[in-house]
Amino acid sequence: MDRKSIRKIYFARIVITLSSLIILAFILAFGIVNFTYLFNFQYITARKAVLLISFITALILSIYLTLSFPLSLRVRFSRPRITGKPRPVYGFFIILSIGIGSTLGSPLFILIPENALQYGIVSTISLIVAAITSLIMARVYNDIYIFHKKNGKDIVGGPAFVREAYGVSSVRYFISRTSMWVANSALAAYCVIIFFDLLLIVLPTSHIVSGTFSTALIYVILGLFIAWFIINAFFEEKYMVLIGKVQLVMMLAMALILIIEEALVFHSAPLSTDLFFSFRGNILEDTLINTGYLFILFFGFQEIMAFQRSVENKVEYYIPVIKKKLRIEKDSIIRWTMIVTVIVSSSINIIYSIAVMMTQHRGEGIETASIPAFRIAGYAGGQYAYIFMIIAFIIATLTTFVPAFLAASRHLKSLGEDRIFPVSITRYSWIFTLIFIIILVETGENFLLSITDFMVLISLAFINLSALRYRKDLGKVDGTLRPVIVGALTFTFGAFNYFIDPDVVLFSILVIATSYLIHNIINMEAAAKKLYSSTILLMVFLTSIFIGINYSGLKTMNAFFLNISPHLQEFLFLTVLIILSGIALLEFLLELILTRGGYEEAIRSLT
Image (cartoon, rainbow, N blue to C red):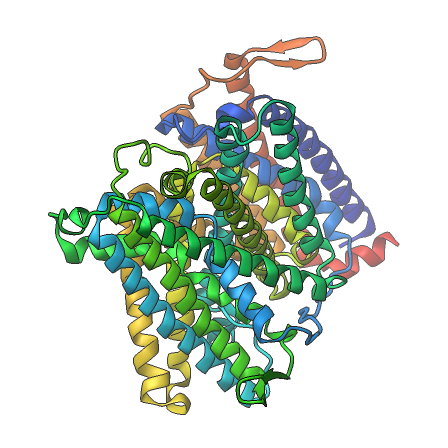
C-alpha cells in the first residue's frame, strides 16, 4: 500500500471520528433531556422498550466509533492480573464479626416480619432449609479452599473457584462472576432505599425528637453512613485494623439488641400460635419458592473468604477457666468463622421469625409499615425498644451496604483483570458499580430483592459445583455429595424465583446474555467489530421503522436557538441510527484495507 493511499484512508477515518463525535453529542443531549422518561421502568410499553434499546445501542456504538480511530494508534499491551498483597492482621473474632455483620443485614428488618405474617409456618421452614443449605455450602467453600492451598495456590473464594476449575474463558465462570456483581449491586441498592426510608419516612414521623433536632439527627446519621463508606472504600488498607475493631463492636451491639428485642417480643402479652397452623397452600412448593426469596439473608458468610488474605496465620487466646492458651490456625479460623456465622445468623433469623408469628399485634399497621421491625419493637417494648431497633438497623445497614458495594466492585474489577472486559475497569470498577447501583435504585425494592436472590443463587450453584472438578482428590463426600446437594438446591431455589416474579428472572438472563455478548464483541478483531456494529445499528433502525418508537413522553430539546420537538427528535433519532450504521460499515471497509496492508506498514509509512 502506497503512502498516498494510507494518508487518504487515515484522513477519512478522522472525518468519521469527528462525525461520530457530533452524533454522540446529540445522543447525550437527547438522553440528558429525556433521562427520567427513558429510565422510568414502571410505565414501559413495547414501543418505549424499542426506543430505550435504540438509545442505549446508539450511545454505546457512537462512543465506540468516536474512540475507534484514536485507540487504534495506541500501543496495545497486556496487563498482568492484580492479585493483591496479603496483610494478615485479623483474628478469629474480627473475621467472625465481618461474617455476621454481612449476613445479619438490614433486609431482615423488613423481610422476616412481612414473610412470617404472610406465610406463617412456611416462613420458618424456609429459614431452616436455607440455614442448612448455607451450612453445607460453607463446608464446600472450605473444602475447595483447603484443596487449592495444599496445591500451593492462593485462591480467593467465590467465582475464583470456578475460574480455577474451568479457566478464564469458561461461560460458567463468566456467569458466576457477572451474577455476583449484579447481585451485590442490587443488594447495595436495596440497602440505600430502605436506609432513606428510615431517614425520610420513619424518623420524621416517629416523634423521637422533633423540629430542628429531628433534622440534625437525620444529617448526623447520613454523615455517619457516608463517612463509614468513604473510610472502607478508599482507606481500607490504611485503617484496616481500626475498621476491624469497629466492625467487631458494631456486630456485638447489633446482635445483643436483636436478641433482647426477640426476648421482648416473646414476653409481650398476649401471644398466640394461630399463625403456625393457618397455612393452607402446597407446603413443598411454597417452601421452595419462599426459600429462594429469603436466601438474601444467608449468603453473607462467603464475605469471610474474601478476607482470607487478611487472616493471621495463627492466633492465641487465653481461656481463664482452664488456664490454658488456645491456638487456632488460619485454616481453622476460616472454616469455623463461616460455620459459626451461619449458625448465629440463622438462629437469630429463625427465632425472630417465630417471635413475630406469635405476636398478637397483627392488623395494627405492622404489614403496612415501611420497616415493620420498628413497629413490632414499639409494641413489644415501648419507645426504648423502638429506638434500640433503629440503632440496630443503622448498624446493619453499615455492615451490609459497604461489604456489598466493595464485593460488587471486586467482582467487576476481576472481570477486567481476567481480560474479559477492558483492563481500564480494574481502575474504575467502583465508579461503574456506583453508577449501576444508582440506576438500580430506580427499579424499586421488590425488583431488587428478587434479582439479588436469583443472581446469587445461580452464581452459588456454579461455585459449589466447581468442586466436582476435584472429586477424585476430594473424595465422594467432599468432592461429590456435598457439592451436588448444594448445587441442586440452589439451582432449584433460583428456578422457583420465576413464580415470584417472572420479569426479574427474564431480566437477569438478559443481563447475563448481554454481558456475555459484550465480552465476545470486545474480543473480536477490529474489522469484525465494525461489521457487527453496522449490522446491529441497521437491525435497530429497521425495528424502529416497522414497530415504531414511543416519543409521546419526550421533552422538547433546546439546542442553542432551536426548539426540537418530540416529532423532530424521532426523525433525527432515526436519521442518526442509519448514519451510524453507514459510518460503521465504512469503518469496517477501511479497517479491512488497513489490515490487509498491515498496521505496522501503515504506521511506518506515516512516521
